[in-house]
Amino acid sequence: MDAAALPGPDATRVAVIGLGYVGLPLAVGFGRALPTLGFDINRARIDELKQHRDHTLEVSPEELAATTQLRFSADPADLAECNVFIVTVPTPIDDAKRPDLTPLESASRTVGKAIRPGGVAIFESTVYPGATEEVCVPIIERESGLRFNVDFYAGYSPERINPGDKQHRLESIMKVTSGSTPAAADFVDALYRRIITAGTHKASSIRVAEAAKVIENTQRDLNIALVNELSLIFHRLGIDTSEVLAAAGTKWNFLPFRPGLVGGHCIGVDPYYLTHKAQQIGYHPEVILSGRRINDGMGQHVAQRVVKLMTQRRVHAAQSNILVLGLAFKENCPDLRNTRVIDVVAELKSYNANVEVYDPWVSAEEARHEYGLDLVTELADGKYDAIILAVAHRQFVDLGIERIRALGTPECVLFDVKQTLPRAAVDDRL
Ligand SMILES: NC(=O)c1ccc[n+]([C@@H]2O[C@H](COP(=O)([O-])OP(=O)(O)OC[C@H]3O[C@@H](n4cnc5c(N)ncnc54)[C@H](O)[C@@H]3O)[C@@H](O)[C@H]2O)c1
Image (cartoon, rainbow, N blue to C red; front, side, top):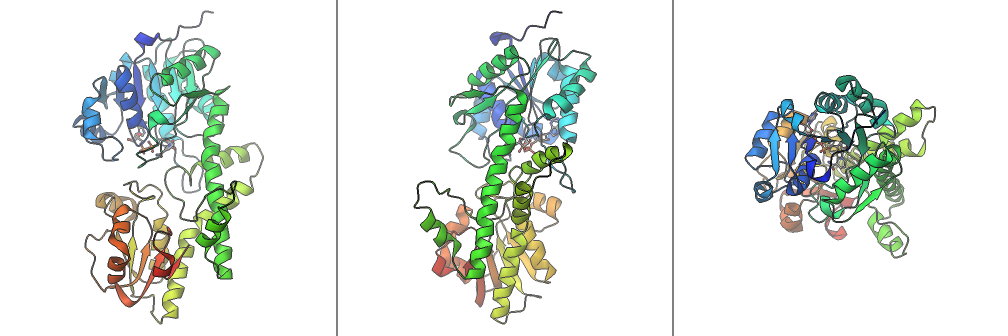
């Protein structure tokens, strides 16, 4: 049984499937080096990209215009001309915090319909170890009628992009690669080396590469959970957590994590992919899930601390005016997905407070659609009984303490979730 030949370097035609925060920079990276098709099921996204606009702000209009070998399409028929399919679709969790593989399965069907002998399907979406070969490959086999590792091959190369980060870019972050056969692994590795200047790390198998990705974010989640738990303890002890961390951080091996809300598409989500797989095979993770519980409770904790401080000043939370500065899941970025600022807002609203949320970065329409929130666009001086600096967007830092204070009443409680403002200038912080 002769195995189909992998595409040669000059015959490689890449399709990137799913042009979000991850897929678009990748498509641009490949589009600079070789013929590339950017594919997305969302026609509006394709239309904006054809006009060189990227609402995620990861790629500038100039970069899009300069990427001459990149075309965009929402028509699956256009995938027929490609022989390498890189899947970068979302991998969310459902309401019960179980992996929702619907987009990944649907993208695998798309690949299965387009792939020809010698084709390679590479997955970048974050998954649990085994998902590529147990879930995606069988779908491709079924749709294409081709045999795995005989007629077509697979690879996994986890995404490491950091939205909003203009310093660590696709090209400058070392990329982990893997393939379903030794030759496929070499092919995938060489493909990425064409665009990643920081180099590649070829993992020994797809499952190793999948596991490596999911633990990157699990480790980060747990490290933040530890400092969040420390901040809960120190708050009860009347000690300022940032001051403790600054002191402890003078030791060379103390890790510089800070307390906060853990939101976004990755860190608060990916650990559930790993714990799901662990539970499937009869192991019930304790450390990982307790870290998740701590982090998921921080929004409520912030709101309760603010209400307590207001009550101590004889300001009733019900009908009070509270301003939340920032809704995005992190600073200087428009990404609203899985923002945990929403937990702060929900808890404050449960006290019947009037909560106003202001965020110059995010789309008002998306905030309404995703969270039923109408963002305010104007801030009134002297209005707010409490102000919560939830996200350290540079606009808020630039405002400065005096302008922020001027927005509040004389008794206004100012809470700094991100430890951005000087300690003495705020009433409390995490
Ligand atoms: N955003 C990050 O910081 C980040 C970092 C590391 C890893 N990841 C992982 O990368 C993956 C993608 O994340 P993202 O942030 O780019 O998501 P995203 O929501 O920004 O973009 C996903 C895109 O895929 C499209 N899409 C959905 N289903 C599709 C389908 N069946 N066929 C074609 N297109 C489809 C959507 O229309 C959207 O444009 C996820 O697994 C995520 O966990 C994300």
